[in-house]
Length: 359
Ligand SMILES: CC1=C(/C=C/C(C)=C/C=C/C(C)=C/C=O)C(C)(C)CCC1
Image (cartoon, rainbow, N blue to C red; front, top):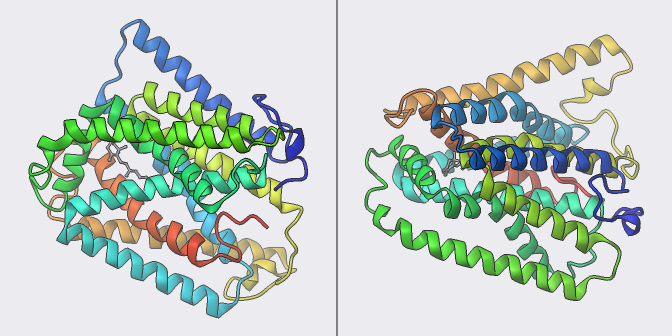
């Protein structure tokens, strides 16, 4: 936990290392809530087409570079053996997820949704650890609950508030692998919507109630309370496709930058110049520039090569929908496939210095 955490309060910009970036993420969500609440009040509705364009801009143009950076930052200064094992496990888990999507597309969709929840939740928990602290979360179970509540906001809240859009996109995502594959479970949507809504509401109350009882007045509870309610309000008010498309760049990634800022001072440069990316630590800046260029090119070939492979493997990559809506479905599946190892390998396997590293 940051040494500044005891000074944290519920201001827009908390007084902690990385606080300015946390402030930016909070302000971004507040502004979007205001815009969309205003639009609803005056009766303006954003079409699905427009929502889809915003989603693609947010997820591809604004957020993808950050995802690449997280791996790069993590793999840098690690031993060659570690780097190769990481990439091997990464590719293995991608292959397993793709196989699941073809064999059991509805289970694949459920996994994609769980990946978004796990990434938002655990990523968020580590940001709290590094910035304003988590002393109100005293057990592993309570930490898991906090992660579930933060990450759950991303999917459970829109399922409840935007059930039709959620259903439509879920069906298209399944259609990519098995046309009509969601029809068997569609009749249960209304029931699951209420179960998920009530279950999630109960988890929020449990998380905030336990945190209140265990808070020790450092301000971490108040900050968590504010952010949890902010996330719930954001996903309840902003239409789901826009909300998810902008959550990742404006909240998730911005806050990982806050975490990095907060832990940077504490990070010892233990292993300079190791592994396959050693060129990036060269004293010759021309070599470093060339190496950085190479990493970006290799990263984009790997990413878009995988997307092209998935596109080629599926008989209906847009799930039968038109552009840009079909692209949202395709990208959501694709990004979940590459985000699964992000969570499992990049963080839970790599506990020493994973992508959400907090010393
Ligand atoms: C089901 C569903 C969606 C799912 C999105 C997903 C699963 C996004 C995953 C994002 C990840 C994993 C990002 C990582 O950086 C949409 C498109 C919001 C529309 C509503 C229905």
